[in-house]
Length: 267
Ligand SMILES: Nc1ncnc2c1ncn2[C@@H]1O[C@H](COP(=O)(O)OP(=O)(O)OP(=O)(O)O)[C@@H](O)[C@H]1O
Image (cartoon, rainbow, N blue to C red; front, side):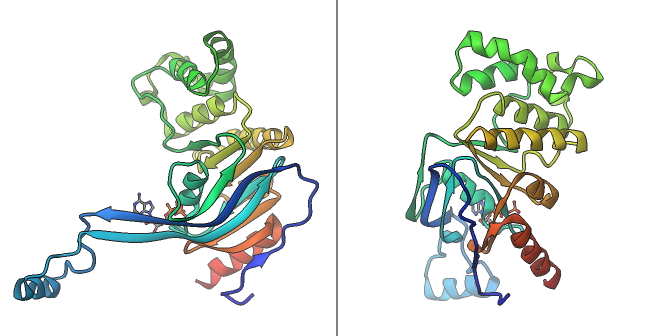
């Protein structure tokens, strides 16, 4: 494929109604006080001579005119090189980053499950599970009833009673498992998962892949950002490939992954 060509082969699958519409979205980060390129000694000297001031805002154009539609019952993989804009796009879908141009329309409030999902390090896992359920809008009785199942599903107690110990005593994999278990205790219309499964071991990855499929099958829409191409293949029948903030491919996972892998080998 020509490097500038964009592949769009979304099969007319029997999906439900659109849940996420991303319409020509552009995202720009502005870093205040970054000084721009004029921080070199020569630029500094020029500023001394001319009396000009250093620019204080630097812009990073992270997403450049991205458009697509996702539907009920779809699991969509997001792949691409480091810094290609995957997390930025996910945060924009979650409503956490306002687009510079274009718009995102979603049915309901999407839930973003990321590596940084807010859990409290000084509180035990079981307390975090309760708070997580309350934060997702559940009543106290419902949340309490779900906690044992969450702990069981996360598997954090497989090597002792870790649920009653502060989260800071957990390995990063255990924390990731608990985070995923909390998020998946509720069914989401749109669930956005950013590398959250990556630190789990093989057994947990298998289990979380099954859970993603269940959510997709119960008419949710799941987006999965991952460098673990195996997980993308396993859970997503559609994949969007981003490169430098632009969609390079959007279609059946097998085809898009093949093109991405060929591209990665050429680099
Ligand atoms: N908070 C921020 N402020 C400024 N620039 C940012 C910020 N977050 C990301 N960027 C920049 O935006 C671009 C896209 O980053 P993003 O994290 O979305 O990429 P990614 O595809 O998720 O990368 P990775 O695979 O490494 O996680 C990069 O150039 C990055 O440096």
